[in-house]
Length: 369
Image (cartoon, rainbow, N blue to C red; front, top):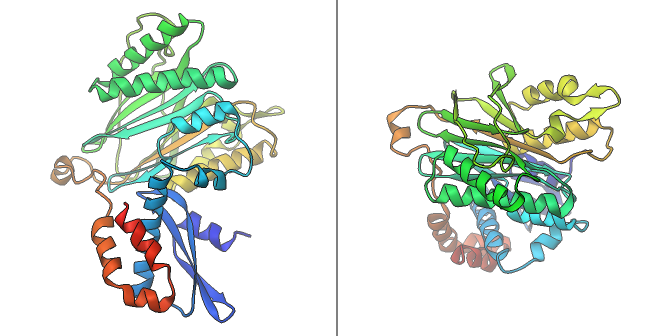
């Protein structure tokens, strides 16, 4: 049975329950869709709806404070880790952007497995004013060799993207960077795509093993793309973009071969369970859909260790495409509402003091956002 804290974390709702002669209130701590944990409060009496809303904002402020604090402390990283990561996994996790984000026009979430011993698989994403770029990589090799190769490729892709290069040029420059270091002895499979948030047009480069699935209404289909060479395999490779049109409500999954090629005895996960699991998770938020997929994979393998790294990324297309509002930038991520709500919290100290809430901590979080 799920714990109270687990329900709050997964469903992103506030839940209260009696606790002796007091009340326990548990709130999600989330920053723009990226879940940090939950805030557990013990209150002398049940709060009314207005106070519950303000406490929910306080939890958001605490989440922002933790994100900022992690720049200078390992305290929260230690709290999250029940065991030590391998060195390769440490490299990979440090390379990741935030693992989930929620905006008006899209939602995205990704996960690596095995979390404590991942080697060469990774994902990266970045939003521009009117577009979202996503890269999922699968580096060859083992341990730190694979992690170092992935770091080189992801950093080269970021460098090209931040210079304003288009998708094909990003792939070509990353290909050159990997070739310059390894001369074809090592390469990295990559699926690279750019989603136009105003039109729903997707440009894709399939350079290796990560594959793309589209969940649209009641159908689940693998998107068949023209395979191109992995990054760093051949000197001077030129890449071509392919196109896909998204519709509101579409879900895209990018999966590495550790998922779709998983085998137990003579059963293949891709034929036994994959499509059913992708369809079943359609109504879930991306974070829960990815967790559900990897949990189902573990169950299929009967909780045995994965033979290969596994990365799952899901992107939801939410807003209408091609509308004037979208073209003007209304579909992009808005700035967090922390500034005005922080002032709201600081202006309403009486009820917080009455309820015995840590007002000073909430205000400290608001002033250090």
